[in-house]
Image (cartoon, rainbow, N blue to C red):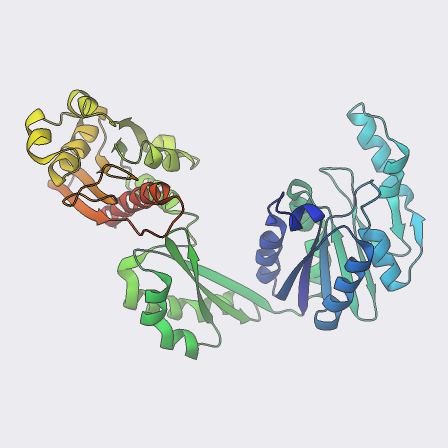
Length: 421
C-alpha cells in the first residue's frame, strides 16, 4: 500500500513555516509498512489542490493531507476533497457540539465562520481533535482514500497517533517496514559511500542509504517483512557488516544526537563531566543541557575566553601561555584537567582555538582547534590525558566561524564517546 503526503498552506511555500509534518508522517507511515514515494506542498488554492489530489491518486492509494481545515475563507481542503469524490457537505452534529464545548471551555466566542469546521463530506469518517478546534476526517471512494489532518503539528501529531493510525492499520496490507539508523561522525557522506558502495548497491532487502546531517552522516538500514521481528532479523546482519567496515566512526544506533549519546553513556557508566571552553563559548555545555536528565552527569563548565580566566579558574600557568600560547596542546591539556579537578568531575573536556574570521597566523591559522580530555579512572587505576589537534576551516561556508565552533563541539563530544567505549 502506498501513500502520498500532501501539505496545504501558502505559508509553507513562502518559507514562513517549516514543514515538519511531512517528516513526521514519513516516519510514522514507514513504521506501519505504508510506503511513501512522493511528497507535495500546495498553497491555499482549490484548483491547484484538486490538481495535486488527482496526481496523488494517479500514483498512490492514499493521500494524507495536512492543513486547510480551519474556519477562514482560504481553508478549502474539506470542500475540495469532497468535490473530488463527488460528495455533498453536511453538518456533522457531534463535531458541532464538540466545537461549542471547546469555545465555552476557554470562554471564547464561537463566531459564525467556526461552524464551517463542523461541515463534513457526507459519509466520511470523522477524527476527534482533542488538542484544537478542527476535526480531521477520512473519505474513501474508487479504491482511493484521502485522510485530512490539521496543519498545526501540536494538533496533527496526536490526531494521527490516536485516530488516523488505527484507521490506516485496518487498511494496510499486513507488511511491516522497519528502519535502524547508524549515527556516524568523522566520515563524510562520500567516504561512507566509497567504503560501503558495493554493499549499498547490492542490498535489496534491507536497503542501505546515507544521509548527510550537520557534520555527521546517518546510514539508514531499512527492511520489509511480515512483522517487526522478521524485519529486525534482516537488519541485524547488515548492521554488523557495516560496523565491521567503519565501526570506529559509528557512535550510536538510533541516537538522537551526539549529545544525547554522551549523556546516555555517562549515565550508564555512572560518571560525571565538566567542560572548559574557550573558542566554543559554552556550546558544548549548551548541547549537553538540551538533553533531559543531563543534570545527573553534567556538573557544569567554565567559559575561559580570557587568558586571565584560564589561569585563575582552570590553573593554566602563565608560563604555559607565554611559551605555547592559548591555542596549544599544552593549554588544552591544562584546561581539561583544571575543569575536572576544580569542579569535582570524573571527566574534563576542553576546547581552545581560533574560530575567526580574524586572529589567525601562518603557524596557527583560523580553524585550528585543540580538544583536551582528562579522565582519572580511580576504579581501574588508569589516567587518560590527551589532546587532539583539529583543522576545521573549510572556506566554503557563509558563516565559517559558527561552523568551526559547532564542529569543535561535535569533536569534543565524540572524544568523550570514544573514551567511554
